[in-house]
Amino acid sequence: MIIILCLDNNNGMLFHQRRQSRDKLVIENIIETFQGHLIHINSFSKILFEEFPENIIIDENFLSNSCDTDICFVENEDISKYEDKISKIIVYQWNRDYPFDVKCNIDFSQYQLTSVIEFKGNSHSVITREEYSK
Image (cartoon, rainbow, N blue to C red; front, side, top):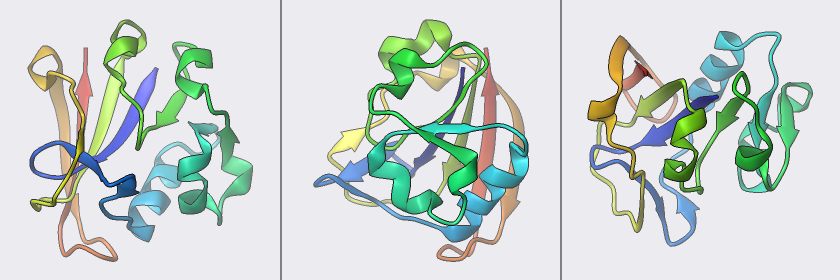
């Protein structure tokens, strides 16, 4: 399974059940990167993909129901219990410190950093896209 995350400098994901940030160009990058593939999400993330309904599958149990080749965009789920299914993690780093109360608890040292790309976002001057593989 390929996991896609958006994280701050401290691996923060959410603050009071709200996403820390959203960036239109991150979503466009995800859609472009995975052309021809469906992105699995839950209803919390639906608003981010409103312009691309044909590219998503909404399932509240998407991580449990996903197979090894599925692509999953995760904002508010604990992915650590699915680590045995994860082959790659793509992280969009906001390169900022935000308040958070939900943190990604994956140990990235268990993965190999295979790619780093920086690009200008819509809401952030620099967004770093990192790819990690097992």
